Amino acid sequence: MEILRHGAAALGLQLTDQQVERFRTYYQALLEGNRRVNLTTVTDAEGVQRRHFLESLAVGAALHRHGIRPWGTPARFLDVGAGAGFPGLPIRLADAAVRLVLLEATAKKAAFLSHLTTRLGLGEVAVLAERAETAARDPAHRESYDIVLARAVAPLPALLELTLPFLRTGGVLAAPKGSGAAQEVAASARALRELGGRLRLSEPLPVPDGGPQPVLVLVEKVAPTPERYPRRPGVPTKRPL
Image (cartoon, rainbow, N blue to C red; front, side, top):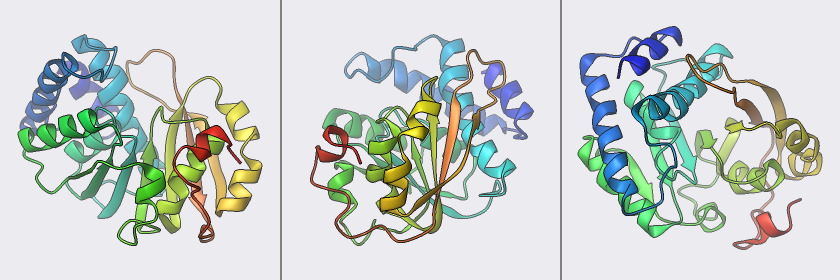
């Protein structure tokens, strides 16, 4: 885990030995879980540290750098389409002030996340096996999160409908994107207008010791999302705004 330790330090995080050991346990559990469930194609130790762990921590560092959520500040996070737990779980492992819910619709992946959080001793991290379109209509989750995370879930116009209903006004969506980020942002004007969002920034995400840089898109919730959104399951991705 030396790549992780040094990369985290470059992001302004001094991980303790206990935190590094938890990341090591995370890596071992990921390899074991990947034999049963398709969690990731990146399985080598170096790749997981750079592409998964450090990229996730870089999202947290960006929130700190832009004054959205400094490290150590209590905040309610939701990771939509959490999959193997990125980026939410690495951020939580590095920062105990994060109150995290992992939302994952695929039952086998949700089961892996439940096993993983228990193995990591993170009993307070909740795993919700539900579709975003359904969970966003639950009063316990609608417009109640400070930060929503989403990595590799859907193109931005659809992603906004799947995520903005969860954010309180003033909350922020943090979505790492690939090389098509500029086109996705350009296609999102209507969705932003309809759902109560405003693009805060779209910029390369510096990942220490990493390869190609992802692009981090930050969207601020500036007005309540109309009750008609999200539409029924499957519609946001089939017919994005």
